[in-house]
Length: 210
Ligand SMILES: NC(=O)c1ccc[n+]([C@@H]2O[C@H](COP(=O)([O-])OP(=O)(O)OC[C@H]3O[C@@H](n4cnc5c(N)ncnc54)[C@H](OP(=O)(O)O)[C@@H]3O)[C@@H](O)[C@H]2O)c1
Image (tube, rainbow, N blue to C red; front, top):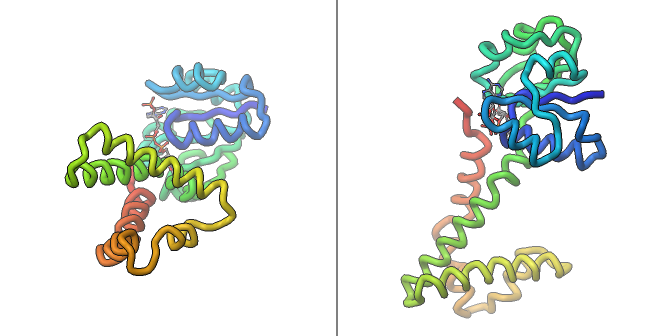
C-alpha cells in the first residue's frame, strides 16, 4: 500500500515520521510540494513526486497543505476512489465531500499535542533567553549568562527525567519556605506566569493558517 502526502510542512513531516516509526517502508511513502518535498524526501528516504503521480500511485492520500488552498488545489487533484485523509484545520467533511465527491474522505481532527510538541522548543528557548537577560541585568556577562541559563534548563530536565517525582514536587523541594527561590516563585505567581504560558499555547493551537 502506498501513502501519498500533498504538502510537506510541519504536519506532513510529523505524520511521515510516525508512519516510518510504525514500520511502514519508506519506499511506500510519497510526498509532493512546491519547495520542501525534495529535501524532506532526501532526509527521510521517501519518494518525492508530483501530485499527479501521487494520485495515481497512492491508495491513501493525506492532504496537508493550508486550509485556504482546499478548493484551488483540491480541484486540480483526481482522487477518484482514493482514501483521502485531511488534516486541514476547520475543514469539514462536507467541504471534503464537495471538493472530492468520488473519494472516501476522512477528516482527522487537528492534533493539539503535536501543536504543542512542535512549538514547545521555541517556548523553552524563550524561557532560556529570558533567564539569560535576567542574568545580564544582574551583572553577568552575556556568555556566562547564556551558558548558565542553558545548563540550568538542561540539568533540571535531566533531574526531572531521572526522578520519580513530578515537576511541582521537585520545585517545592528546591524552594524552602521563606527562602530566596520561594520569593522568585511567588513573583511568578503574582505575575500570572501560568496564564502567560497557557495563553501562548492557546494562540499556537488556535492560529489560523491564512
Ligand atoms: N502544525 C500543526 O500542528 C497542525 C495541527 C493541526 C492541523 N494542522 C493542519 O495541517 C495543515 C498543514 O499545516 P502545517 O503546520 O504542516 O503547515 P506548513 O508547515 O506551513 O506546511 C504547509 C505545506 O503546504 C505545502 N503547499 C503549499 N502549496 C502547495 C501546493 N500547491 N501543492 C502541494 N503542497 C503545497 C507547502 O509546501 P512548501 O513547503 O513546499 O512550500 C508546505 O509544505 C494545515 O491545513 C493545518 O490546518 C496543522
